[in-house]
Length: 556
Ligand code: ARG
Image (tube, rainbow, N blue to C red; front, side, top):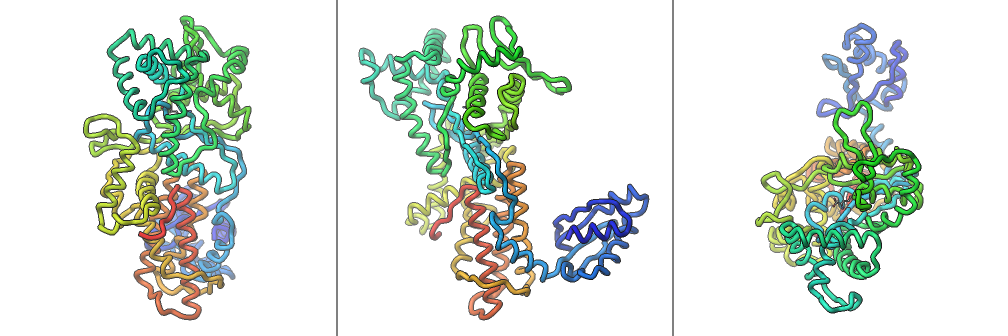
């Protein structure tokens, strides 16, 4: 369509590449480039637009593409495409791989999740996990090789604190023989963190343990491993429930193993400077409109920091995978930090590929502040999941006796669709009741649409005719034709909300179709056409739902 229009513009003497955009009610598409050209050619947009419409209508293949093209003041070209063209395009799309999106073939490391060992997952871990997994799914779908790394915080202050507690709670026992469980761990961490806040001496002792651990103390290592195994198995259980998966279960502790190799390398680049005994890298650049402090590489006591571990992690990823890009889906409040790390990594010659931080917003409570429990503490992710489940079960009697696996799929759909319909940078209020509704912009609404349509259509390997039967039929087919671009845009921008929002629009179109077209009792070509369109609709729904981490229940 754009090619023909461009030809007409050129024939009329305009040297330009015009674009056609989706339109609202009046037309299917619109071209508003006449405004731009009016400025360049010192004419009125009307003069240009009207001439283009006139000339376009004389094109020999006009009717293959267009049903009606009109000029509208002050300078729009409104386009209604022909039914024949819609059918032809749909037939082509149905034959294409990856729903007509553009294949890619890069190696991309994705860093999401980022939980801390010895602490339970909380609501703050939700967004990075499900946005990260969605981006991973989308990039893989397009053919990229992705490597997902959970990047555990597994060697920070909390580890020293928990080890301190274990040593005191299990006196006179060999470290190898000490046994404790998850309940113990869940109690001990908050207790220790409170204690360290009020008792300087304990805090210092814990810090000493942490430092020794980081330096490779073999005795502490024994307890560390026990804590790690226990905590990580619990973290995995919840990620599994959410269908969030990682290729690598590496953490900051793995990065520490890179330091003997990486530190001398960095030092040789001449970018490190001493400041009060500490080693730092300046990362401020000319033209920065904000103040960016230097990156601290090593403390004066020789200790390493969060940033050092991220540099070590990049070092390792480059060595192992030679990625084209490393993507971080981490809380947006760390954006300044990542800028420091990225600049330091470039400056120190560790990595020259693309480094991108997609900073996610927070899940908020009714007060629009990051979600807290009623008592004011952080809400465990497990509690949030359970609350959603309970709410959904209580909505209708039938929900209580639902198949367990189906129920879990619906809980996933509720949580993920609520989250992923928002631009990842935004915060949103977690309104459980609203998210569980079957009517509304919700996960259950999309699932319900899919299942309802699945019931009325049969497999059909026929060929689509060139007839369109109603406005709602036409609207649904046009909506389906958007899918390739939606996937490409979501992938290019690393923004899964484009897919979530499209899923909703498609479901609305499909429901309109369902309500306004008699489907039962049809025979012949129309029956075939409807079955083909509806089957494809459900293929698109299912594929896109899977991309954002939602699977379809057997019934609901
Ligand atoms: N564990 C970190 C935290 O709790 C998040 C890790 C994010 N990923 C990274 N490569 N720094 O803040």
